Every structure is written in structure tokens, then in C-alpha cells.
Amino acid sequence: MNRNPVLPSLTLSTEPKALRSVDLLVPQTYSGNGFLALDDLPRVALEAASVSVGDGFEWSVQTFFDGLSGGEPRLKMNLTLKGQMHLICQRCMLPCVVHIEESRQFVFLADEALADAFPMEEDALEPLVMSAQFDLLGTIEDEILLSLPLIPKHPEGVCEAASLGSGAKDSMNQGEILKKPDNPFNILKNMKKKE
Ligand SMILES: [Zn+2]
Image (tube, rainbow, N blue to C red; front, side):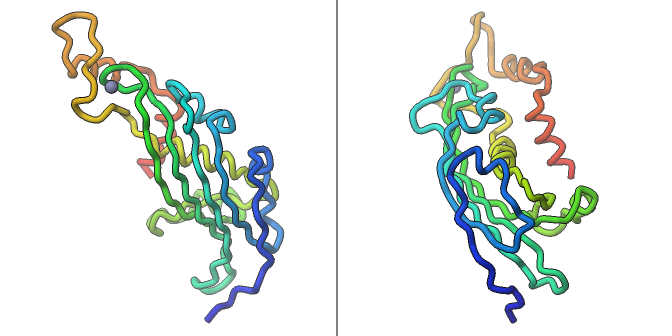
């Protein structure tokens, strides 16, 4: 049984600025796709070791009302991301390309308290807060940051450990990595893992 009313579907703008403020309180659904260069993603750009032609992320979004659980239909969103960027290889300390291909589903809840209380057991369904100015671009940035490897490396055998002395081995480099202060991106990642 389909309890969903037929709602108008709006095509999302591909303009990064427009993606900063999407009105979710109106009775309509959204779909859209586009490409975001690192210039359009300031928080992701901070992590970039270098920028090459082709770096950036294709995104695709679809929102829909899900009334299957009974009661009030809930607004959900599918987000897929595919793209690449360059991070510092933790073996040779030179830029290495990192590919990302992610698919996530979100559910929108009325306020922060409901989102915080949302049971995480519900398979990979991530809670977000409903808003008339929903920051879709910010959510895309969050998902890219969470998808990046903690210790990016070139494929095995492609590069050698950067070392000043002849005795330096991988284990010493690992020690250096551990000494690095936590950046906000790693903290966010660890927080997510604990949930
Ligand atoms: Zn390397």
C-alpha cells in the first residue's frame, strides 16, 4: 500500500551556493546531481595535499517520503558520492590519489533532540535535522571527510618510506603519525565510530 501523496519533485540547482540552503519544510521532494570541485568544498579542500585536474566529487541526491513504518511519513534522502582527491601518502609523504564511492541514506527529524535520540541500530540510516535552510553542501562535505582513509597510502610497492637517515623504517614513520595532533576531521571520524 502506498500511503505517500504524490508530491511535486523539484530539481536541485547544481550551484554550490544554492546547496547551502535547501527548504525541506515545503511539501515537495528533491532530486539532482552535479559535480563539486574542491574549490566548492572548503572543509574538504583543507585536507587536500594538492589539486589535480579531475579532483572533485560527483553527487547525486534524491529525497522521498517513507510511510512504510506507519504513522507520519518520514522524509528520507539518498546521497551518492563518487570522486577523487589527493592526500599525503603516509609512507612517502608525497601526494597520492584517493578514490571515494559512497552511498548513504538519511532520515530527517523535527529537531536536534530527536536526531540525538535516534536509534543507530536502524541500519546505516543517519539522522539529520529538518530545516527550511538545510545545508546539503555541508552534509556532502561531512560524508566526504568521513569517507577519507585515516592513513592514506600509495598502493603497496609503488613508493618507499620517506627517511632522512638510512635506518628509518616504516615503524618509525608510524610513530610520527601517532604523534601528530588530532585534527578536527579525525576527531569527527572517531566520534562517529563510537556511536
Ligand atoms: Zn607514497
